[in-house]
Length: 329
Image (cartoon, rainbow, N blue to C red):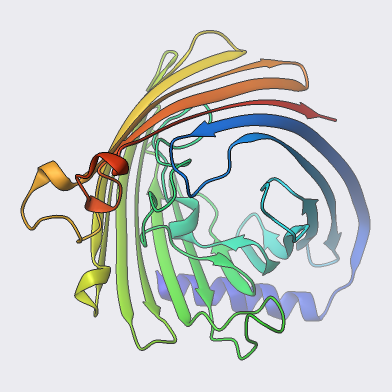
């Protein structure tokens, strides 16, 4: 599988060096909206906030048949954010060899893309609680190289790599985050319509001499208006306190082509809970719903997070809700 990836990258790079891009096309898309969030977690903001996004994209094809695409997004979908640049990338690909993408800013690794693929109608059941996510969420950041293979009878391969950076957080965006590599395979068998199975593994050697091996497995099945999903995560670290694992499941139902409702749960152990005690594992659950009318979407969720951080203290039981109205142009 690594050999296939290397062949694809080399072939794309060699072809690109001898050709020029022609017949480029570009587009601009704009979305805006506002949301109201409320939570019992004192570490997170509450109240109304606005979010905006402007995406510039362009693509063209070389004489050698390679599609070259570029994308840049300006947004401020985080009420605490001061950085308007969210995503910046350029990609090269063919139908036969797949696509190589260099993310100058805001890229997501395979594990990052698959941090939670269980069905929902808005956000994940752990989304609005500080500390509720885990080290199993892969890598999202700057100067990330990714590869997506074409589908071979329903089988696709994905990989990502990020090298060390010398720039510090105080000087600019390219933090020294350590070397990271992950690889994933996704199977959608043609003989079982609606079934998708995926597996990914990752290795991180960070700047504190900590080595973390991550892996995730998921299965999703869609039938009629229902979609069911199950996923497991595990992180094994050279530092025992950094080990964690989670199990999640979700179900969504498309009431009609415009409305979807969903429910999900997750059990998360960050290795700080009492050894062998499931009662002190963090348990997340939540309902979500969305309704679309043309370019307008109304969506929201209500989440409950118990034993956040592995603590059974009453103050570590959180509740939150968020409702959003979004317009796309």
